[in-house]
Image (cartoon, one colour):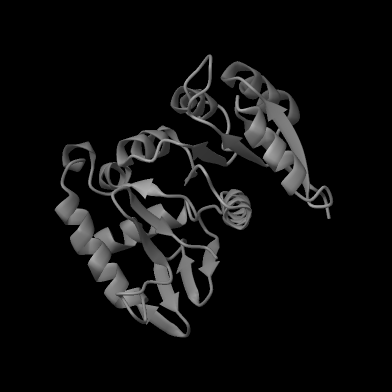
Length: 229
């Protein structure tokens, strides 16, 4: 198996040193950059599998780095930041980050997030006409059919659009605003009640225990994620 290449863009030497000493060299190849500009150049030249990005960089803020990267690459981006406010998370996720982890973090949690991001990258290859599968949940894009085990699940057009929007970016947190814009349109970007109501409908139809969802999970204060592991 080929190594997973990680690019860490962080100006804190202790963070880079921690990752360098903690990540298994048999599983990961680690590349490093201390500035946003150097990180962007490294992505263009080395094509890493996952980017670990700090927000407080000395030259370019990490949110702006994310925006620039999303103009030309879909490489998964995991934010590693000491900023823990919802506003910071939302800004990064709206800019195109796939995940957000607050410093200090544990290595097992980081590795889990990296695995999710890698699977997300694989799922980006899913195209119209394919069958998207997570466990017993299947979405048949060609004929717009959703099945759970052997049973077909009847969804309204809005429910189906909400589910497929999450599925096409599975593993990634989508903010409330992103989902409202994509499913209902820009005029509804602040109408969270629509989203909460329809997410409740989807959970009632897809989750064995809607109060403890396996698929459609909430990122409190930020948005929703279709869980892929």
